[in-house]
Each structure stands twice: as C-alpha cells, then as structure tokens.
Length: 245
Image 1: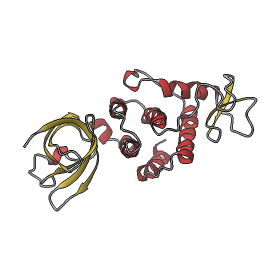
Image 2: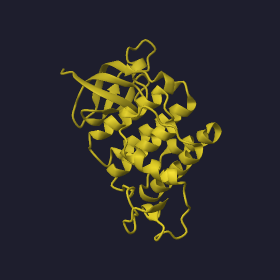
Image 3: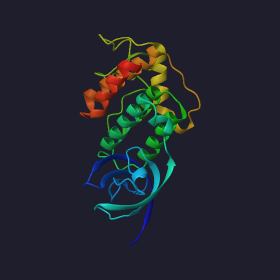
Image 4: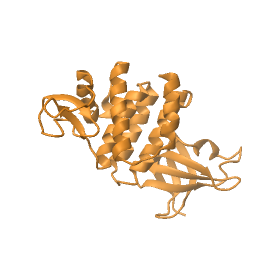
C-alpha cells in the first residue's frame, strides 16, 4: 500500500458507519478529496483527534485518484485553538469552509488553497474575522467569474467614483449614478485595497464599524445577485453577527 503525504484542511465530516467518518479534505496537491477515516469515532482511535472539521494538518493517506482514499495518520500543523474557543470566529471559519467548497466546484486553481490557508491563519492570529472574511469573499468573486469593477466606473470607465452598486456591477461615477445609496468615500478606497491586498502579508488593519458594514452589505448583495449560492453556514453566521456585532 503506497502512502501519500498531503497538506490539507478538513472542510466537512460525516458519519460513515458506527465507528468511522467520511472526510472531505481540501488539499494543496489534489484539491478536495474524499477520505475514509476508519474507526475515527472510537474513543481510543489515533484518528479521533485529527478527523474533525477545520483540522489543518499533514495527512498521510492511501490516495486513490477519483475514489475514496483512506486516512492513515496526520500531524497537525495548527490546531486553530483561538478560532475554536470563540463562537464568532468558528462561525466565520465554518462559513469560509463551506464557501470554499462551493468555489472549488467552479475552479481547479491551486491559488484557492493558499487563500483559505492565509485567511484562517489571520483569524487565528487575532485579526478581525469580519474584515478578513470580506477580503477572501472579494477575491473568490474573480474565480467565480463575476469579478466586480473596482478600479473605475462599471458603466463608463470614469475614475471619478462616487459610490458602489451591486446592480451596476461595481463602482459608479456621479454621471452614471441614479438612485444608488452613496457610501462613504473611505469605503470606496478600502474596497479596492481589500481586493488587491495579499492576505498573508497583512500586519495591521482596522476599520470603523460603518465602513465594515458598508463593505459587508455590498459583498452580501453581490453574492446574492450573481452567484446563486445558498450556504447554510451563512444563515447561521447572520444570526451570530446580530448577537456579537
């Protein structure tokens, strides 16, 4: 039996039998693969602690391309303890895992793994999960083929931007503005910055609650209008945000 080592993050888990689990592991090498963790539900199993959602590890598996692989063992890279002990952070992380799973159905780009990895690590480090999540959501739009226009007016190309509009697909100038809500000037600046920023290199980022809300509202409306994605974790996240934010 040939053993393959893969770096990955468990994005979902389900019961396979009374004692085993079926894992969907997002790997850097092969994308999302199905892996059977035999006996992982047993209390004394060596796989018990490394077979739950959000486990980030080097997995050793009996890899079978296009078929169900088998988990042999795993060495945890980062346990994400800070995320797991905070309900808001774990809610954002769960949303990101489900969103990533959907994005991977549309693209085979290996960039996605690095983007998710960097995002989770920044949340673990203590960065605002609202802002960090917004950055990843913006970047994913490109891979979904529905990137908004965030460098000029989406209608005429003018660089004299007034606001941002979901219906018009991005920034809107004064001449093309009709009845769209006017957002803060800083929201315009930050939206563009967040799209282009390298998540892994972020060292400091603080935004007012108003700016965060305007950015979050635009992203949510944009996803609702153009992606057609329905995520159970997003509905739960909205409930949690109403309590914590």
